[in-house]
Image (cartoon, rainbow, N blue to C red; front, top):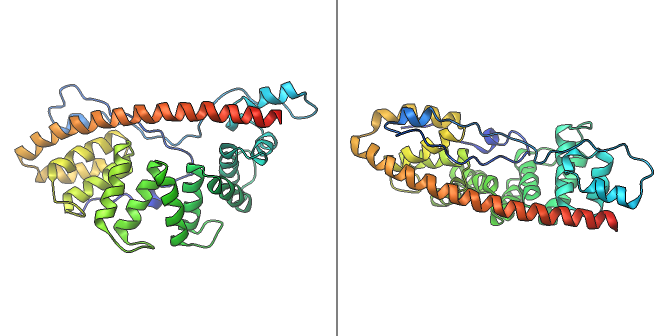
Length: 293
């Protein structure tokens, strides 16, 4: 049975971070139609909100510190650039996003590549993933799957679900590296465990077709339901295909696995949220110190 795969290019609509959504629970969930009715949309957003930055000009040190304390995505391009130039990696990454996507400035792939590189080389996980994708897609730099693989690996090692998904897709498709379905399953599993819907859809596909793992329609059902709840349209279509092949035992086992996978993902997302909050607090402190320097 051929399902609709999740690919890097389909997934990577922008460099904006994806919100990981905890799966919802349909009352009773007596059948997979009830599960699908509980779909949530996986949104791409640029993190942060706040007040508009004040016009630049002569400002005191205290005003500069106050400005730096605002969410980075609310700063003017000039203010964000100043913070990025002081070495703040989150500012470097967000500045690159603006230059790539033409947000509050004209599109400039040269500047985008420069700031993605700085953030990536300084160890920023999103920067590493984004810089890797530029090489994968040949955007602003020559297409180079080897470089893409290198930067995806660095980001994945830091827990980036998007990078883990990208590595899984490269291993699955043999794009730039030797095809290895076992490795593909390993990386899709890591990303799926963090609630990333495209990875969950890809994992379901592997369980249906026995790629890198033994065929298991109950596992496929569980992961495809979770992916559909996470906003994957492909997963919803794949469930339409899968339902005709499910035996009663597959469905019963799938429901039990769905509960286990859902609870584990909720715990993982809670942990990731705590880590992001701690990282954000640390980053804001670093920005303030940079402004004081």
